[in-house]
Image (cartoon, rainbow, N blue to C red; front, side):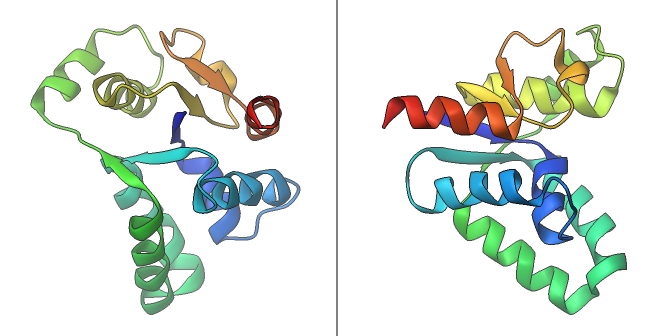
Length: 139
């Protein structure tokens, strides 16, 4: 199973955000252990860097991004993705880009804490807790 992991889930782990840390960290651990494949949207990586560097510093942030890039694949974002994302009807363009990137990559699902942002999704969207349940069912 391949999951595209939303920005908020990764930031929960990098910035140690409670109460979301436990489930979000479990998602990254599941990917690291090979229970599923993980992808990040290309724009997620730059957004994470922008937000996290202010909290943990540039040097630490670069090290964390390097770890992420060794763990995750990256779903591309090009002109077709950006153009299609304009017409999806998503309220938030950033979420629409993530969704269209996920569709282009052929993922099975999106893991996010903001399910309401993906109510128009053509791909299953799970919270981290829901996705962990799905993974447990496949064991």
